[in-house]
Image (cartoon, rainbow, N blue to C red; front, top):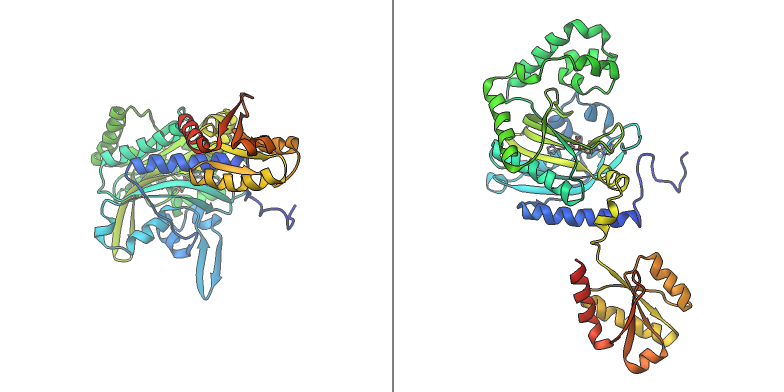
Length: 421
Ligand code: HAM
């Protein structure tokens, strides 16, 4: 039911307590991605429609069915359905000096007007990377290893990597012809969409969600059968580098991914703990012709809603949250204590301590507020503490309490926080 107080169907508000998990995931992501030499790139959520139609492919589901397109000032604009095309649009506007070897990451909302269901949203969030180093199986393996590393740092060390190749430039035609021939005798048993796809974009038959089409697809020869030896060798090299890096994967001979810009390496990472929408992440190597520039890169995107869902299903969210910066809740007994706590709170914040307080209420109600905010400590001051220049620091989980001199507080708390990090 639509109501002015509800978000748009398929879109969600993300608030406490879940938003803490999001913040923590973003923090871990920035940390891991920086270690791999990536810089953040923030592109707009609104782009010209052509940014996506020219690179994702006119006949992909995303372009044909799922884009939010609108017109303003005679230009066709859209909400970005994914991050890669916008990043490459940015790259195409730069010179070779800035793009050669560029490593960019992004974190943000994407929009696809799909039928909402568990794990499938109309606004969802991706953490993605694009690496513009010269094509090499070594780079592909490093980027895939980074993705596995990031998922592990979030607490997901048991996802399955499915790997394959789309073949080199120009091979798409041979692969398409091979698949068309292999599908010819099954045409009447395919769904209406797939019958159209055979002539329009036969690769899309391979990722049709329809069960009877999937049964036919399972009988098809691997797409590598239609490729040249060089493409198969490229895949073998990626696989060998992954072996050397200790990254487990399975070759999926019919994995082609749903976007047309890919060539050579493609992969998907799936979790058994998601329902029908079990893809946590996808990636691969791609080539795009943008104006007079042709750019190649390799990258991936992870669906953050799906990661949150798996972490929650497996009960691993608490583990990640433990590392959230601890909060001190200042409790003041009486007006004067509350007033002085405001100043103390600013001193502690300046020292790097996260603090909050209530502006009034009984000791009981203030302690309740501390509990609700998940505070690690309550810092309590009444008349006696004010006179003596001390404060009582209560560990909310252990229930223990100690009295500290005000001067000692910033150093004591920062040391405690560092010890917990
Ligand atoms: P993609 O496979 O379309 O790839 O999306 C990546 C991930 O985004 C999916 O695995 C899934 O977790 C999440 N996702 C996609 N659609 C939805 C949805 N409707 N609701 C919730 N989550 C969703 C790309 O977007 C490519 N740009 C990845 C890439 C980057 N390839 C190279 N560089």
